Image 1 (cartoon, rainbow, N blue to C red):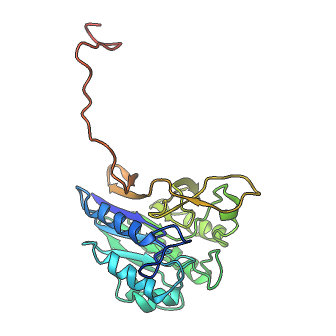
Image 2 (image 1 turned 135 degrees about the vertical axis):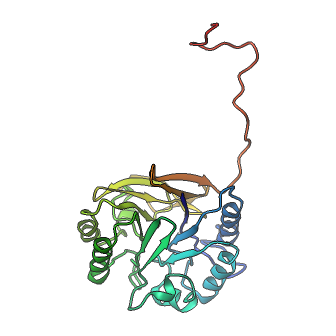
Image 3 (image 1 turned 180 degrees about the vertical axis):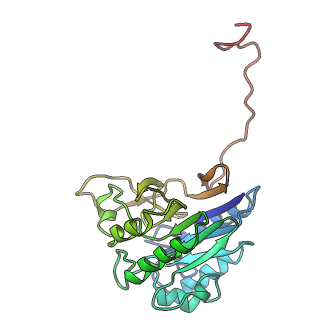
Length: 279
């Protein structure tokens, strides 16, 4: 079995500062890391699909290093639109994958147990939307052609329309090219994304795309084309992707906050249910 934890959109700030004045993202990220550390079954790796920082500030990358260092397993990072490729490479060059990436973009391959990770960089400097470009599209085609291991593709911007207009306007500009590149390959088990701060599952190019909620604040679910972008504090969560050769990839939502329980499934004494032998 291979187990991968997927967190996204930390939006870390310099020590003592909040995000958008009300979201204590540093505390919320610390809480998420502790939740992962407390899992009964330790993940083989953690993947963070971008927006580690809120403003690409060196102090925010230092905060990311401080918080992520508490994880005892490998951590794989890609930039989001709030980060920059240059900023992440400069601050976190010793992280797996990043240290091996060359060129203008941070894209790389890594093996996590039975899974092959293809990590992509959709950052466009100074812009909120995402774009991969011809080099990464060609690279991912060649990687999928050369290796038929079960594969997970990580990219910050989702390649689908979510129905939330203000987020769809800043999605992945060359999603069609990505779809054409990966469509022929049945061994793509999952595409994982962030950016939208909501749990979303969709089909893309005949594959399953899972978009993880943020471990900090969530985008308000509003399909109205005139709605302003807003956020709230719906329960923070992350995804656990569990792979076995028998089941394939199965994705579970894990909540950061603890909930009451667990309680056993005991029926009240003397209560009978339809279908019971003595009912």
